[in-house]
Length: 85
Image (cartoon, rainbow, N blue to C red; front, side):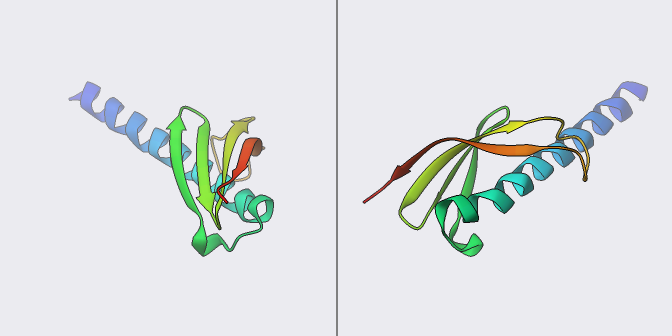
């Protein structure tokens, strides 16, 4: 029973981290892609790497710093970008 509770806590923490990481990317990408936030799609590519597409543009972001809690210094840094024209 204790193991199940511990595993549940880990899932909740990791789930919270993932949503915080996606939120960090979703705040940065509209500016970089010059695109409305409603037009952007975010996909986790692995670990701390996210792909973003919208307005005929694509970009890859890598998260840097601690992304563990709201207010942490989690930064979304663009790693590459492509115009889909």
